[in-house]
Image 1: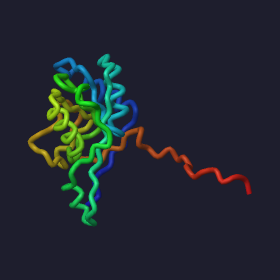
Image 2: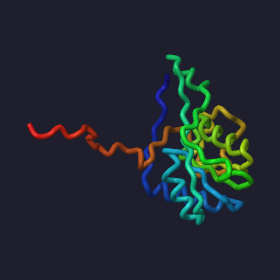
Image 3: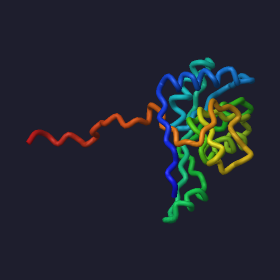
Length: 169
C-alpha cells in the first residue's frame, strides 16, 4: 500500500477555509448536524458565523470483524448518537464534517436525515474525490479539493501523558 501525502494545516488556513465556505451557502438552515469528532470545530465556527442556535450531533462507527483492511469498507454504519426525528423533519439541516474522504460517514448521516423527512445539505472543509466511494456524489459545500491526508490543528499530538498518576515512589 502506497503512503499518502500528508498535509498539516494551521489555524490561519482553517479561518481561510471557513471564510471560503460562508458565501457559498445559498439557503438558510434550520439546524446544523455536526458529525463527531472531526466536524465539531468546523461546525462550531460555522454555526457561530451563520447564527445557528439549533446545533445537533451525530456519531457513526463502521465496525467490522474481518481481518482484511478492504472489508471495513463494506461494514454497515452503526449510529452511536443521532438526534430525535422531530428535530429533523421538514427542516433544512446542514451536516458538517471536516473531510469527505471515502464519504461513508457523511453519506450515511445524510441518508438518515433524508429518511426521517429532513432536507439535508452536506458541508466539509476538504473534499477528496480520489478516495470517494460515492462518485459522482460530492459534498454540497466544500472549501478545498485535496488528494492528501489532511491533519488539522486540533488533531496535532499535544504530548499529554495520559497515564494515571501512580503516586510518588
